[in-house]
Picture 1: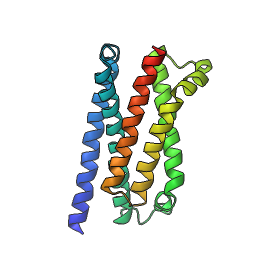
Picture 2: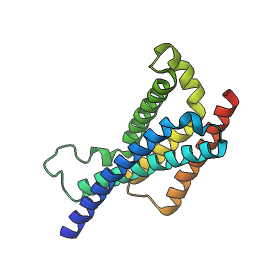
Picture 3: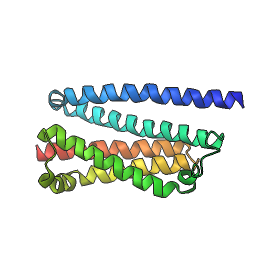
Length: 176
């Protein structure tokens, strides 16, 4: 039992470290965004790496939660297993929240503020990559919470994000 608790603690600390690291890389990405777009290959790899980091962080965070629940850290909690019992519902809600916040953050970055009147257009323009990235996030969460993640699933998920990065760069070039 001590070995399992040590492993869960290590996963949690790794998650926190990578969360801080992802914040720094995301900030650097947005600060260098305009300069990066002079090299389309570099932009593609930056978007793809950003998507892989997001998927990996979700995977690690959900794994940490699953391990906490399975090892009984929430024994006194009445609803500790509700997320594990309904992985599809949680994955859908979580995916919607992540995509919505991402679109709001992108709108704020490009427009300097959130313009409610522009949101329908932004949603429409970002729909192709939003659908792909949303599906990738959904599969990541569902597989992790179902405790069914395998290496081939991870390759599939990262493949989805690869295609999403291609679509995003293509769309940016088309609109730019």
